Length: 124
Image (cartoon, rainbow, N blue to C red; front, side):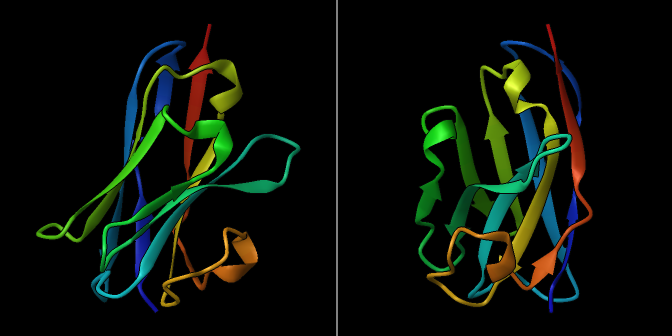
C-alpha cells in the first residue's frame, strides 16, 4: 500500500482559496486513483473528487463542481485539491485516499489507503 500525507489545512476566511497537497511515500501514485473526501463534525465522510494518475481524468461531487479542482504533479508524486470561494459549509477534515482500481467507486469503503486528514476551517 502507498502511504499518504495530506497537509495544507488551516483557517481561511469565507470566499478565500486554499490548496491541499497529498503526497505519497513508500510507493508512487503510478496506476492509482487518488480521491479526496471530507468529514464535517457529526457527519459522515463524503466523496469530494478523484483523479486517475494514469489518464489525469477527474470526477467531482456535484456539491463542489466548479469550485474545487484536483490536479497531479508527476515529478513530485503529489495530488492537489484546490478549493476556491470557500464557504462555511466547506469546514471539515479533508482526507486523501488511494486505490489501485481505476474505476473505484466514490465511497470511503472502496479505497485501500488513507492519509491522516487535515482540518479546514472557514470563518465568516
